[in-house]
Every structure is written in C-alpha cells, then in structure tokens.
Image (cartoon, rainbow, N blue to C red; front, top):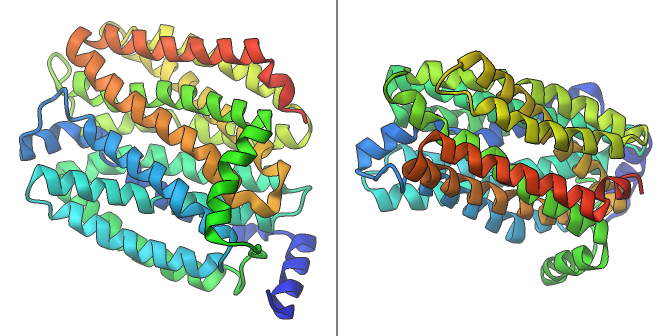
Length: 404
C-alpha cells in the first residue's frame, strides 16, 4: 500500500464515515441485496411461464442462495486485498448484465443459471458492509453497521413490494430489467461518493485469504456459534417468505402480486430493529438483544399459523419474525467484525456463508413442506428451525459470548 493510501486509511479511521456516505452505502446495499429476493413473490408467475412444478419452484431461490454462497467464498475475500471501490464498480456492472440474462431467459435452465449468477454477484452487499465497517471508527462501528444493515433489510422487504407492483404492470421479466438499470445508476452514484482509495487493503495472497476463513472460524468459537445461529434463523426466515406466495395467490385469497408484495412492508420493523440492535451492541447489550429476539422468533410462528383464519394475526407474526431475525443478525455482525475490523471482508464472508446455507435450506424446505402438508407444514418447519435456534443459544450460552 502506498503512502497516500496509508494516510487516507489513518484519516478515515480517525474521522469515520460521514452521514451521507453511510446513507449512500446503505441504499446501495439495499439495491444489491434486493436482486436475491425479487423472485419470492413471483415464483408462481415464473413457474407458469417456464413450466416449473410448484414443488420445485423453490429451486429458483435455492440456486440463487447457492450462487450467493459461492460468492461469499470466492469473491468477498478479494475485498480485503484490492481497492474495494474498484471491486464494487466491476461487480455492479456485471450484476446488471446477469439481470438482463434472467429477464430474457427463454428456458428453465437459462433462468436457473442466470439466477445463480445473480446470487454470486449479489455478495456486493457484503463488500459494502465490510467497507463501511472498516471505514468506521470503533465508537461508531455498531451504528454504521446497523445503518447499512437497515438498508439491507429495507432492500429485502421493498424488493417484494416493488416486484409485486412491477410484475402486475409489466410481468416478472420487467422486474429484472428495471433492476439491471438501477444497478448501473447505483454504480455511478457510488463512484462519486465513495473514497478514492480502499480502507486499507491488507497484505497476503488470495489463496491465503480463502484458507484463513475456515481456520479463523474454527479457532474462534464465538464466530462458529454465531454462524450456526445465523444458519438456523435464516432457514426459518426463508421458509416463511419463500412459501408465502403459494397460499396467497391461490383460492380463497387469490391476491394480486402487488397485494402479496405489500406484505413485505410489514417487516420494515426489521430495519428499525437492525439499526437499534447495532446501537445496543455498542453499549454492551448484545446478550440481552440476542436472547429476547430468539424468544420472539419462536413466538412469531404461533401467530403465523393463523394465516388461513386471520390475516391480522399472521401479520403480527410477520412483524415479530422480521424484527427478531434482523436484531440477531446485526448483533452477530457487530460481534464478528469487532474481532478484527481490518479483516472484515473475510469475517463477514465466512459468517454470511452460514446465512446463505440457511436461506437455501429454508427456500426448498418451505415450498416442499407446502406441497406435502400445506401451510401447517410450513409453520411446523419454521417453528422447528426457531426452536433449534433458541436451543442453540441456551445450550452453548451463545448470548453470553456476544459481550466479548
């Protein structure tokens, strides 16, 4: 690293991120991660268009998460070795191309392959989180990570609503064409706002970075335990959101995709939780936040099970589900990054591997359970995942480890 870059890194670590930079990075993270979730309210349309069976339609989400997981392994570690600003631009433009491929897919295989590539490149969001964490000062790190994570949560939830509205107007393909355009615009904005140099790229080789991730997680029990918790809570999260479109688009509801997408807005409480959970972590309350959130996650499925009989009770369950999952998630991120902020890309990449595996498991489990047992089967699986998360927290005293 040259002297100019070193001076920039030192100044950045002292001054931290400005409010505008944090906000832009949060918005960019939201746009990036939305690409993974646009499909959830559109699965029935995509299935009909390309002749995919209802039980197998979850493969679209699952393969996207598989691609995301591969990106976490092979792309995110690069962010600790090169200029992150340049990496963000390249990834953003490649993602736009992949989205165009999805929008124009004429067969099931091209669609599935395109979605896997979209997932692979969507790890841009983790590079943005790692970049923000490294640029932030120690005193503001939890708040900055919370803000960027709030952008991620907002992107996830808004993706469902936007996808529903656009699909009702122009079809599911229009959703991905619009997203491709938004990625190009995003790259332009980031290019003008992000610092000219990365937040101190580290030394070492790419292979060293890859090998160091599993070694670090095996050496640090708190990382492995936080990763395991992420896997389970996001399996629960994905079980619900992937399967939701199936009962709502069928009789007796027969909701439009715009209306189904609006259900995602209920979960905006998760974005609020992400922001405040980061602040609580800064103040040493990660243990309390994690424990309460795991209890709320389990309770949420009792309300979600009322879907055939009461939409309001189900919506209350959605509120608890998103709030609990995102509160645990941002607390996890604060704990993980605090271990070594300058290797935040590798640490976050390793942690998010667990997230991706959990999301993939939940996607295929949710649609399969619905095909076999209907909505009660979905609730049974989601509740089981949530119970396992709570059991893990209690059995390993994971919440106590959060205050390290």
